[in-house]
Image 1 (spheres, helix red, strand yellow):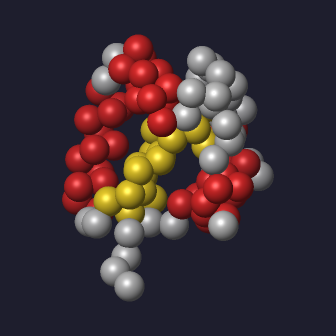
Image 2 (cartoon, helix red, strand yellow):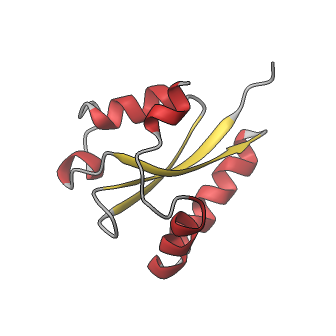
Length: 97
């Protein structure tokens, strides 16, 4: 099985503070955020809810997409989340299955 890469968005709450990241191990990375293992922005602003993620076949495409989303207006990010997760559910349990 080929390695996969993920672009993800965490939120502090519905319409709250957002964080966009990239990783090759989504389960581990989200766990680290949820358990305050990651110093910095997500710990400072209590950003722990996985509200969006997408899968990429290469690190290059994932990093390019992450950078693109980070440059987006907030409204576009909210629309991206709302389109796939209108209830702003924590998707962490979903990725554990």
